[in-house]
Amino acid sequence: MAIKNTYLLGLMERVEKRNPGEPEFHQAVREVLESLEAVIEKHPEYVECGVIDSIVEPERIIKFRVPWVDDNGKVQINRGFRIQFNSAIGPYKGGLRFHPSVYEGIIKFLGFEQIFKNSLTGLPIGGGKGGSDFDPKGKSDGEVMRFCQSFMTELSKHIGADTDVPAGDIGVGGREIGYMYGQYKRLRNEFTGVLTGKGIPYGGSLARTQATGYGLCYFADEMLKDKGMSFEGKTVVISGSGNVAIYACEKATQLGAKVVALSDSNGYVYDSEGIDLGAVKQIKEVERKRIKEYINYRPNAKYTEGCGGIWTIPCDIALPCATQNEISAESAKALVANGVKAVAEGANMPSTPEAIEIFQSNKVLFGPAKAANAGGVATSALEMSQNSMRLSWTFEEVDEKLHGIMVNIYKNASAAAKEYGMEDNLVAGANIAGFIKVAEAMKAHGVV
Ligand code: NDP
Image (cartoon, rainbow, N blue to C red; front, side, top):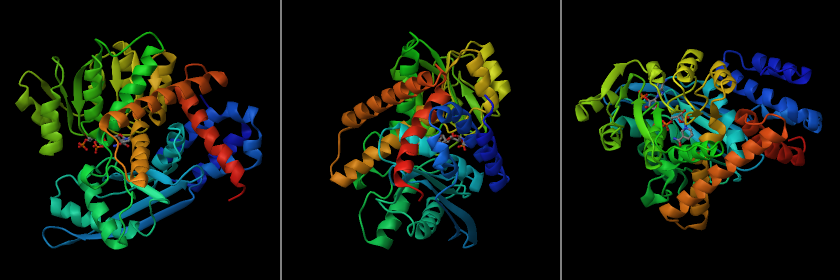
């Protein structure tokens, strides 16, 4: 799809000019504006009241220095970000990413996507995102703790349980959330649900760790069922071996599929007998080592250096769960040539626009990230509810709510696509369904 409407074309040009050198943000905005062509034909009032002009501009961008001392006593300086993108339907909500590739454009694209994703969950949460160019890889626990404390010392001035509630993302798991929560509590002398993804002993929700991966499979399962298919007996390839990938692998296996590959940024493993998740959890969650260690546990498995080649492995279902733009047009062509039936995005924006076009034109079922990976943030919102009520729900209660939310997201995205004349196009459907709720709230609030 390309933007044809003159107003939207002009807006896209202004976004590119105002945010130079931020291709990921441009890509995310372009995809949403493409989907909105049909909406503004029906609802010209969204253009007239300035909602679309406003929604592409963050409400607030916070950028700060993060000084910390490494194990050799040397001062290190990183850069921290928090983008509070849109609070029309609730407090800003979205993860923190610690990865050397982080810069303003990455946080902006993620924060923008988060607005629509959070709206799709049906829960009252606005869109935000943050992070740092700090690389936790290879750092000692002490170094990670000192970095997190310094990062939170500044961030604590801008967040709060009713204002902005960050969570984890790439490079930010339970360890990092724990250090940041401890520092927030110490600085503010309050015990509130200011972060989600917390440990169970101090206010975390059961099933939050599993939520994004499980939710991805619940969404994909619903998408498959709608077309008379299921995970049962299918071969699945999953990229990444972090939080999302591990729990997608667990749920896909529980649903009767065989997961044959996982990766990290160095390479991928192929195990024709099905991935041994116990070994992966030991390597990644306990030892914090590289995925190539897997062949020490499973000598029949094969390790290949370089992560892109994972998409040449024949599979029925592909679940990209590593990072943005990891599926190129070439990878998409390889997947289609090998007969892939469904692709559901666990990572944020893992397929390039060209790859999406290839999937859609070849009738591959395609679940976009905004819809398919919304289970993480939805369960974070459930963690916020439990914190506010000072109650804890059981694993089963949270998991059941998560399942219901993912089924609804599929149904709403699918219905919106149909209503606006783009049946089966879940990219458009998710963008439209997510947009309308936020646009209605913004319209009601007036020019603010
Ligand atoms: P983790 O840090 O736990 O794992 C990330 C995984 O992706 C690692 O295996 C990592 O490998 C790999 N990876 C990261 N960057 C690259 C890269 N540039 N090239 C190749 N591989 C890479 O992160 P999560 O599992 O939490 O996040 C994965 C994706 O899911 C991200 O896109 C995130 O935004 C998205 N997401 C996460 C949610 C959550 O709840 N955690 C919620 C919704 C979306 P290596 O160790 O080598 O870096």
